[in-house]
Image (cartoon, rainbow, N blue to C red; front, side, top):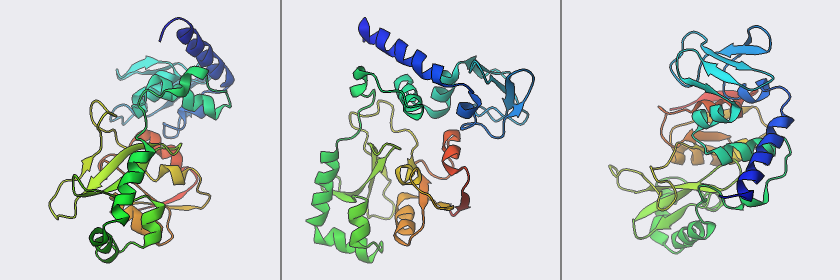
Length: 263
């Protein structure tokens, strides 16, 4: 990006950060119970390392932060990038959306393009043309046709695998999980042309969770279990990298909810 592009993003950044009057509302989404510590400062356990005593501090007015154990220091955007793995533009656009700042005209092209809807629809059509795979999903997995259609479960004939599209908070398809019906076959991610270094951990179901008004949420293990729980009327989510990976930024989605963890 050159010239005017840089100026556009610089102006947009200044506008977004200028809307934040109390940065504790931003940091609190990624920290557990931050406590006041002197003029305008708050401290909490650092989410960037295995912290046992509060070593992370941030300023409510300026948004500056520092980890006194050595993780680093910077501004609010740097912090969110480190904790979420998102790009600068994605973090800035998310924050801008939150504070009602119109997106710049140059934001039409995301850093990491979402997976095309047409690709997912093609796999979906292939599933409904394959009665053997449909029968397996219905009889062996226990899914209804309504569930299969709602979540756009598909069939990749080339890889001989079922496809499960993973969406982000905005509903963009950011990954597709491909599962084989064979017992010992390893699940694979669809990463072709999307993520240079593989696929980051995602919270499957976050697009529905952000709109959910109920009180109970189930965290389970695996996409198939999540779909069955949804089919039975539960609000369920799962991390795409297994139960050993739960990213700090996901906690904000569960504030005010009762959470049941089932593995």
